[in-house]
Amino acid sequence: MTPAIDLLKKQQIIHLVHEYSHDPQHASFGLEAAEKLAVPALRVFKTLVVKLDTGQLAVAVLPVEPMLSMKLMAKACGAKKVDMADKVAVQRSSGYVLGGVSPLAQKKRLPTIVDDSAKNFSTIFVSAGRRGLEIELAPQDLVALTSGQFASLCQ
Image (cartoon, helix red, strand yellow):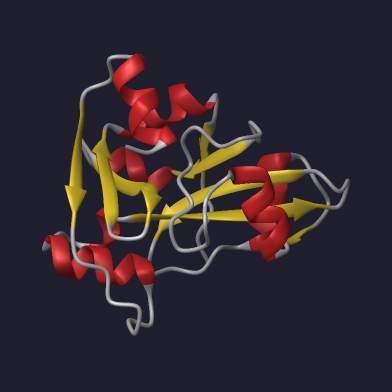
């Protein structure tokens, strides 16, 4: 179990856990999940942590293929500018390893923005907190559990 899965069970949120054999040679953790789970890449969402111009961290959850628009993320967070957070800061703040960062049950609760495209699906896939492990859940449940919000994030 991971903290993300434990949270879903504790809150009695409907979800499915999908496990696959992770290939460390694969170029993209998210695309690998889509391929191995045989789901469209638009339904598999990556978790990125950014640093706001205030120094605070925030979480962006968006489909694995498009790039994060830093301008749109800044706007969604009410910041002037955002940059990708340092790897060490991400691991320290989230409690997860890179490539397995879940938007759920992070050590420090951070502002979380989920791309609007998630609302197009009844369920989406996010990392369960370990490489090779994904959680399928309703996007509205993800936003509720993270006290997040929907906004346009993709370039």
